[in-house]
Image 1 (cartoon, rainbow, N blue to C red):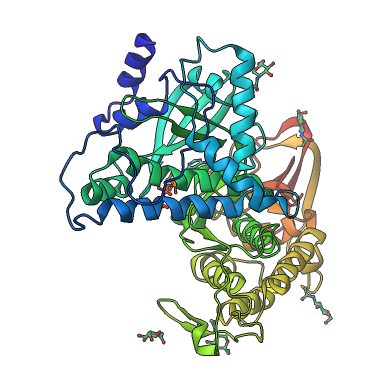
Image 2: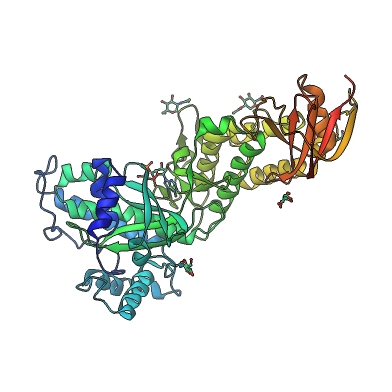
Length: 498
Ligand SMILES: Nc1ncnc2c1ncn2[C@@H]1O[C@H](COP(=O)(O)OP(=O)(O)OP(=O)(O)O)[C@@H](O)[C@H]1O
Ligand SMILES: *[C@@H]1O[C@H](CO)[C@@H](O)[C@H](O)[C@H]1NC(C)=O
Ligand SMILES: *[C@@H]1O[C@H](CO)[C@@H](O)[C@H](O)[C@H]1NC(C)=O
Ligand SMILES: *[C@@H]1O[C@H](CO)[C@@H](O)[C@H](O)[C@H]1NC(C)=O
Ligand SMILES: *[C@@H]1O[C@H](CO)[C@@H](O)[C@H](O)[C@H]1NC(C)=O
Ligand SMILES: *[C@@H]1O[C@H](CO)[C@@H](O)[C@H](O)[C@H]1NC(C)=O
């Protein structure tokens, strides 16, 4: 244990992060005690963590306010859980409360018989409506290669390798983060402030579990363990992604940028029709998403909401954005119609579509893409229509139909050299799939000819056997054809007239 801590400490030299990291990992604890207990009415008992500072603003009412916030978060999480059999729900709740309050006195996992740990894991999972996770504390304690990835207001995120093979993301409350710091300043109750923040992770885990979709990050498991000051610190184990860097995305091919928009639209379509109802992402900044194998996935769900605003008139259904305001119709049932869906759509427009969709698209697709951008920016379409239109663009692109109306008269003639390639003679183009050469995707050899015709440097090109996510073929464009080498998987075309 000691050696491991030392190794981690050496690897992670940011002293500020160390406290959190050690809380996340390698602290012996129970395999899976229940989730943080809910608050009782009134002031909670004194927390084990000694107050750091006297309360700032709220005098005697401070503790009650904190207890109320804890209760609200707890009840929110219960709303997202797997529903029980109809009618059983109300009856189940008080019993679960007791279960969570009466957290069993725990010994270290090492002393705990396997069977008992497994039973507790199952019970804690049931309380949250979570399925028993494939990964838990045991895997976490054997984690290697821990690296800090990033943090926001509430959470710190680490990369780790579990089981020597699976790279995962670990999410834990950031003790040095804005959320905990502000709460401790106000209430001087570290343990309860920890719990308040941890409910965000619990909420996120429950949502990740209930919202299963190719564009929602996968939850692999979680671990509750005691740390020095705080009992039951929570670590969520999820699929690993890479941050979505807008600047980087603007430099990639239209095909890859379109993929981001398509995955976002598929996600929003799912969220609008999810098992929980219409889900809106209140925080929609690009940092709430990550990229996994070229697909966008939502990672941060602690600001998701299923509340649909109630209204008495249209003016209650006001949505304010920095550059634009909207007023949605108030339905006869007294709900703002499709507000969750439309908020997501406008955010998709302003953070993603305007930057990623039209720019350097195939010219024949531009009118359709401009229409999509305009219709989402005006909120003329709902998510169903938007998703259908993006799928249509995908079909036009994949099938090569988008090329049909272009007149294709080649200016040059090309000599086909089968089973051959040109190793060097690269030139650079933009946006290339290869940083040294000009590597682009084409629908067929005719499109490659068209591209080579339009570049004055292009004197030859090499069809490879590699394809992109849409099934298009990758082609190297070359500045000369002086050295041609045999290669059974490639076909070279050399310009013979100019
Ligand atoms: N699964 C993941 N793989 C890789 N990086 C991730 C993953 N999840 C989160 N991150 C990175 O960690 C950062 C913080 O994570 P997250 O957004 O969940 O924390 P937060 O405290 O809720 O942040 P915020 O204050 O922005 O809501 C993110 O900006 C993201 O770049
Ligand atoms: C860990 O890896 C081993 C072999 O690499 C595999 O058999 C086992 O199923 C893995 N365990 C988990 C929990 O993934
Ligand atoms: C949106 O509404 C707010 C509040 O009424 C107002 O201050 C702002 O000017 C409006 N913005 C636009 C772009 O109309
Ligand atoms: C949509 O198109 C109309 C008409 O051309 C234009 O006035 C409007 O500004 C466009 N809206 C957006 C959000 O691009
Ligand atoms: C190609 O032209 C036909 C007939 O003019 C039209 O119906 C079709 O939509 C066009 N396709 C594209 C991709 O522009
Ligand atoms: C391309 O060719 C290489 C070398 O023969 C082969 O290993 C690879 O599987 C091929 N890839 C595809 C996608 O066919």
